Length: 245
Length: 237
Image 1 (cartoon, rainbow over the protein chains, first blue to last red):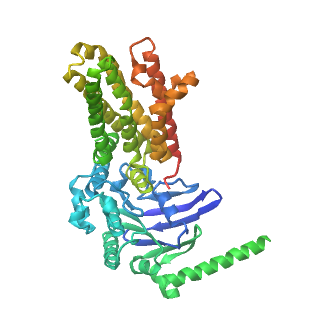
Image 2 (image 1 turned 90 degrees about the vertical axis):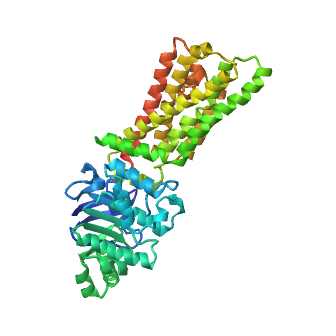
């Protein structure tokens, strides 16, 4: 489970995350949706302790990310791309992560099979990879510790239609195994097909939250729900500014 | 296995799998041996400089190697994606720092030993120096080798704190391979900068050796600590 409570973060004069709270539950895929610049990636980085929040708390599987003795074994994270050095081979990349986290080497082959990365590519240098292969290697790295919580930032970027379909089934399968899956995306139609619950974000704030089914039945699609809530949020903002004046 | 040991194991595997680390090590050893072979072939006919002086000159130029080694080991994670992966794998930044420093220190010490051996091989093979000469030089060579981990770790720490390899290594090499010596003529106080203190000729026997070594270690420790504080406080974005 991921619990985000009143998290805020400013970068200079810009508020990138503004008092955001939500819970991502076990056995579900939770989608963090919003346009580019909505604050999804900033929030993801805060969840993983890559960035420091100005206020609020985040607990992943009951603790802060950095308080887990071996986070890789509990929380699998994939940010855009693979996170591997371009001149390293995929197996070498996974081996160092495994060594640092105390995971057996044999797991490296297992995860490379799981993500369907062609065997011929395992020993190729990562700079020769396509964007889709980078994504698969990133997902393999996230899965290395067989974690109960998985966090993916725009995992569909660079995947071809076959890859996107594979990813959909793959994420669904992870949630069905009882894992918590948090997925950030700006592809609303794609997220609609896989997510159980969604958090809609814009300009650092949560503008709506609920189950995918309830939002789709109320608005017709997640995209419609997003724009309806965005319009309502803008209206509230205008009203608030009017009140202040 | 304790967490620090696991991180060090991971860092060691990562460093050894990086082509630039292996290439730097290989070229340093070959470069020093080749430099001496060529210089001494000429020296045998014309020069009157002792062969041991040329070995020290070769070692002075070879200080590029620990600088590059430190830059590769720390700097391989300076990119946005690799840096994130590093922190996701080991969120305790002080542990990363310790592991990287240990690996850099051990690798540069090993490389220092190999390069010193390469610097002694050609003069011995050509009969331009004797085992007695080498024995006389030995304490100085050991001190030179011991100074390499300081250079490597200090460079690496600066690279990862500032998240730029070229931005740190280029000015540092320009400084170390000429500018520093030039400026020292006009500003004598610069004789106490770390690169001057760690130059092989500065490590010759003498009452000031320990003081010089300590000052150099203190300067390297300061850079290392400041870099760690920067890394601890800064967001990974």
